[in-house]
Length: 234
Image: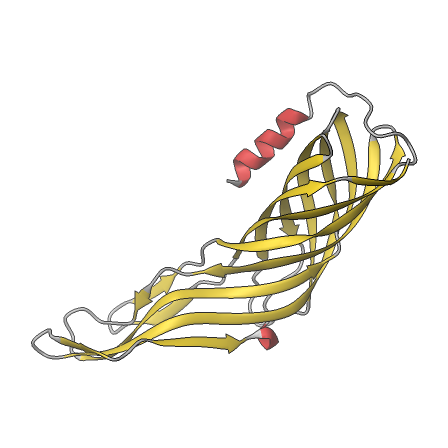
């Protein structure tokens, strides 16, 4: 996914350059979109009697939205500053700690996900390659507002004859903010296209800092936004 994103970004760089907004234009762009996020090195490991198993962290979808201000300081370059909210984290496939063929008490886990709520302040330089088309990069500090782990757990007992008795499923929601770092710094790299003041944008964020206090893990996420430009000064 990341490979195709950067190939598209690289191909756009060969397009002809032309002027965009007039120098001195200040605009505000409210936007909403989708965040696809994961956490590296955040697999769940559990020991079985004869083997060691792990469940890989996978991308989860979340909401992102907010607003950005953009100032056109050159005919083909602008500077933008934003205030955004994003739901990040990861999810896991369903699993259990059952040892096949062995009687005992076990637990099954489903719908497991980690939700990280961030307030983000992206500062970007936007370079317009053609009318409406821009590539961008910058720096983005993010501040953790909250973190929760949610999952459903079903306890069950496997008898010697292979039969199983299941307990009612329980939903668990835990506050895990204390396990995560309060700030995250990343480099956003993106591309956008604007038509009739409607802006469609995609960004990839390269995290520079670890996200969990005890583990060397990092946030990985893409954002896909739709916004609308309102010119304040021309």
